[in-house]
Image (cartoon, rainbow, N blue to C red; front, side, top):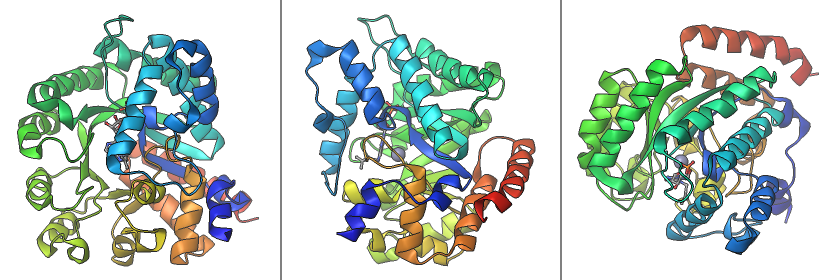
Length: 354
Ligand SMILES: CC(C)=CCNc1ncnc2c1ncn2[C@@H]1O[C@H](COP(=O)(O)O)[C@@H](O)[C@H]1O
Ligand SMILES: [Zn+2]
């Protein structure tokens, strides 16, 4: 009972005031209840309800059902106006939760009915970031262009070219590429040329890897790139059917993991919080960054995820502070930004530990 209470209520003050880095957030999965309300009133004819766009109190869904949720949200977000509102709201919500640096990722979509193109999709996301900056919202936001793996080789290559253009023209806002989408669809080997090209042109790579069991071959192939960060990596280690070989590659290349506790529990790739692979990697001293994945869909925020990690694995405040501070080393923005963030953490420390 207590557990449910902790999950669904606001995190304690310490966790909310803790300065945080969010590295794994899908734009359309991060849309809050309040923003969904606004989208409903813009599109009443769609007859969509909240139960179709978020997974609430103690609920779980199959992976398949989770991916249906994204389709519903994407129906609600299909114009430049929608994207601008959604991205602006999401950025301000992360800022209000104490996130000082955010890497937002999203899959560029084309919508024939509304004239949305993949290019204007990305431009609108960047416009939201720019506007928040001009308004003085206290958060540094960068963008990762996402490849949806179910769309295959050609779309992946087009997406890389788009990301490359924006990397060169966005004044440092576009820093990398994400590979995501239903992990049971398609094979990583078909996407290797696109990912290799992205890497060669200087885009950083964050790849969803081993999110479901029995993807040893694909994971091995993708790890050879190697990626700059790993999303989830749930089934990499031998205890859950992975292998020492895969773990070795991750460790030798020192590839940080983006770990999303509630996402994995609600999506049922992990049986419960205490069996989350955060423990395995954290015990190893391997760079592990707590993230939300889809704060809207999974009804959570980054403060709650830090609190859950702390209460589940017995981390004291000093350990939690260290965890959030060390996430700075894993960001894709340049070293100057890392230095600024470390200074910010130092300045905020007395207030957080008051
Ligand atoms: C099903 C489940 C437990 C989800 C969490 N794990 C995920 N695994 C892979 N891709 C994801 C996940 N969450 C979000 N995405 C990707 O992010 C998209 C939504 O954000 P966007 O439209 O790219 O802005 C989804 O369509 C999907 O391609
Ligand atoms: Zn994800």
